[in-house]
Amino acid sequence: MTEAGERHASWLELFFDLVVVVAVAQLAHRLQHPTWADVALFVLLYYAVWSIWTSLTLYSNVRADQTRLRSMLFGMFGIAVMAAAAPDVAHVIPELHDTHDSWFAAAYVFCRISASRTLSASGAVMTAWPAAQLGAGLAPWSIGFFLEGTGRYVLWGLGVLFDIVFSVIQSRRPEQLVAQLQAQADRLRARELRRGLLGRPAQEIGTPKAAVLDPAHLGERLGLFVIIVLGEAVMQVVLASSGRNWDWPLGLAAVAGFGLIVSLWWLTLRYGLSAVPEIHERGLRPRVALPAHFAMTAGITATAAGLGVVAEEPAGHLHGGVPWVLCGGLAVYFAASAVLGIASGAERRWIWGWALPSVVVPPAIAAVAGLVPAWLVVALLLGVALWRVRYRARTPESSLEPATA
Image 1 (cartoon, rainbow, N blue to C red):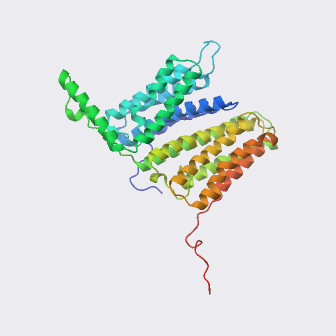
Image 2 (cartoon, rainbow, N blue to C red):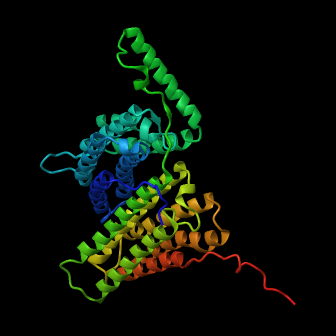
Image 3 (cartoon, rainbow, N blue to C red):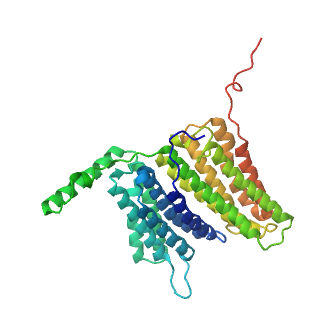
């Protein structure tokens, strides 16, 4: 049930999510014949899309009805450009003799700067996730325009690392961050006064203050993103099944894949986006919940890509990087959930009996995937997910010792 007065995603936000659906689909296709380099690049590209969505989601969360349409549409168009360029990042286009790396990076930098300026203009300081506003990791992406090949992607990776580390560290000291931005605003105001450029009232310049997040709205938005990536998994299985002989191996793969998707959805429905029993997302700090959300949704996207490959040849054996993408994606999802559970003080019985086994077993399945049919690999992963679904918390009555005479 929804509490009275709680905000929900607006029509604008739901429209904005449509372009993310396309971007996730484009990125999932990059993992259908993966190498370790492909996986690493997928993580960078996925973070770029996710970070723009997160920045604008946090902005709309804080501004509510004052959210600017132009800012959201700029972000939407930028992600559309990134989605179109994503398949050709690090892949030379024969007609151009070049990649679309610069287009992807330019759209990313533009969207991040646009979101940052929009947040700053509102006077709100995003202390919960400072990267959404301050863009600590944009410098490496900008320098990457002048490099080619591996060096460029290394810089992108540093940019992602800077973003996450900066946000985690700075969010622990929100007062200091607000004070720094206040000092910066005071210097700007003083400079404009000296130059005689201050033509607007002081109150319009804005005094920086910590942004106040709406937990219910943010939890819903993060959950909707999980639904987007689960929809990608459904699409991968459906599209790969079209135009093929619907024999029993394909039927088993489809049923197992659908069951896996439903299990992940059920965990989100029952326990929230953390998939941790009795740990509601409103109790999670953004500096913990957002990196976990990034890892969990990236893991589901990787698993979705693997499901598409399985549906193409369900009776064959998985080789190369495919089983590690398929099984590893699920392991990453459950590992992020386990970290949230441990950080939130989840029941030890759940941690040792359900959370950790669901992290360890998928890589073990990947190690033997080349020896068994592909549909069986998915069926085994379904068993892991169902094990998590099967968990039942102890009731106070069940934990009591039986009475003795």
